[in-house]
Length: 518
Image (cartoon, rainbow, N blue to C red; front, side):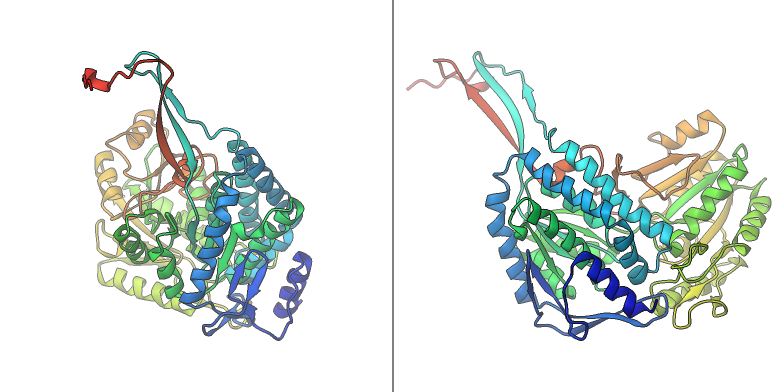
């Protein structure tokens, strides 16, 4: 099936009614679709570069309409008991289950993910829904012993307000779901600015929320979608009706978001760049490590924030492991992600390929040795797409290029002699998202997880850097942003805490024993 025909079939299966020759609306407030006042945005598939759809993007002024819609519906939504809010999310999850293949199809066409990875991303949305539904009956506070007689001191968590969500292209469904599903059960409404590369995925996700809201006769304006450029994101960040902005993307983008929101004393939840490292000990199970290395380094064509980019290997096994990785790379099936046998799909676009080549040039200038890969593939792949061989580069430790994140399948290999040196090399980058060690030495494993070990938000033992489960809070440290999304107590990001003191006696004692008689 041709790309345009695939898009039409996917739209039809979700009930998105739209003339095939007209641009999609750039502003969606609930079930109201409004043509944008901005430029025409043409969406191309990375599979072969052909056009998927066109959007009439929203203006900064129209972003305010979405914010107003979310603000107006917030007073209604926050008053609904949390378990009933959970019922909406349960139905969203059920629809996502029913439409899993369709939703995955949108991801494959817009991002170029393989079928397995696209299905996995939709499953992550479904899992987050299950997680959020359970949390909707567990938004607990604390009761604290009061120093004053016949007083009760307690904390409770209350809805925060409209939440702004800004997402990147590489996980157009899952990262939105981490934020949106938890925000909804917490009593917040949504204003979403997706990546300009993946507006069809956003439209499909919004449609699922819309369908679930219709089943429960709930105002669909609790969810609002704005498709546009940087001015749209800037408007969301500047508007004081948005108490929290959750943004996923590059470190430069995150710094701008942080500065803008902080200027009005708002909150941010930032998931920014990763430059993830893995230590391979001389005691490591190399067969196990090899599988983890290859998946983490080449999955999503190296376009994950958790992709493995730095491999720190003990000098006694470096040559053997490097040869095994290079051999494994030779057998990887690279091509059309719609084919079931494909393991690696295309880069998102030409710009990514140019960045990859620039990084490889810098690596060579800084003493690196290209062991394999790095070339563009043109045979047996769809014409018009950007397909590349994953690159493996042996590098001296602590060069400038290995401290930078390149969103492409480049794996830098470095050697170490002592464990403390491996940790030092690992931590000597500005990012701090995900990390891993492969070792059979219990003491090394525990040290890697200790205060003197990995400085990342995620630290794994005998497992790769990517593929996080939704039950654990996801996020990083340093320039990665110090945000936490999804599991455990991340729901608190989307609520405000109130401390309450209740006097059920006849006296009015003051804290700290202060006496004040009138």
